[in-house]
Image (cartoon, rainbow, N blue to C red; front, side):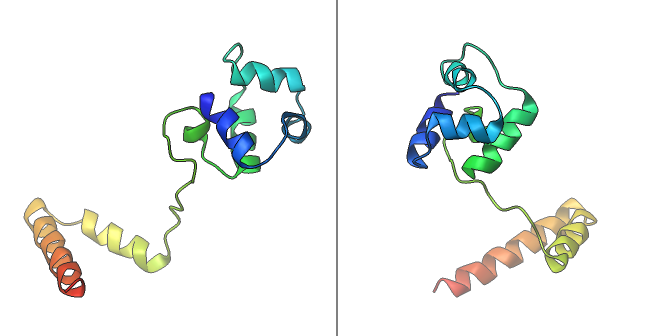
Length: 107
């Protein structure tokens, strides 16, 4: 959990305050950082919420500390649902059409 140490520092949060927020000991936080013990899944999730980052970042699966917002509105969900109903040739046509619109927009 090398990224845990980085984000705690970036957020100007003390290990003590993080420990209090997580309801664990400061020693536990130090052991998470030094990879001596692994936190429970529920602790990692809570840690990500407290530090406003992703669990992937805390688990060193990504170098990007900023979580992506994957919430889609109803229209976007409908577009994806409809796209998934298409065959491969139709998907290629849709992708080409979208790329053409983007290209025109960038002129």
